[in-house]
Length: 134
Image 1: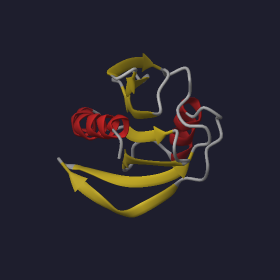
Image 2: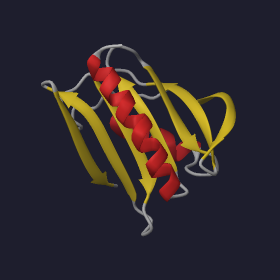
Image 3: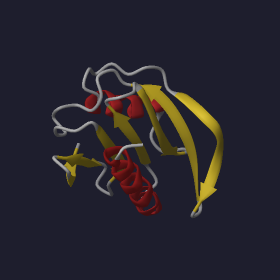
């Protein structure tokens, strides 16, 4: 695992616990250029699979996302039930996010019903963080 992937994964794991505890709709995933496989976690009874695929399409460079499949059994953490998932994304992270080879993405529902998306990635050796409201 290179430093870019390690940084994105570490940020994802740290922030996933915090974000999930705050709201009842949450999903997080990592998109890497070196592999088409996208792995992530979602809050059970949170976003629907169709909503999740829609977010993935926006964050995938090609916009082409494979079928969503669940990995393992749901598990509990901090009073919430999570499910790991896997899918594919051709082309790596979308250039609109930034020039990077890997990005950690978190999406959570805000109290006003909009979705906040947070991107953590490495660009030119610096850790970058961006937040968008969708």
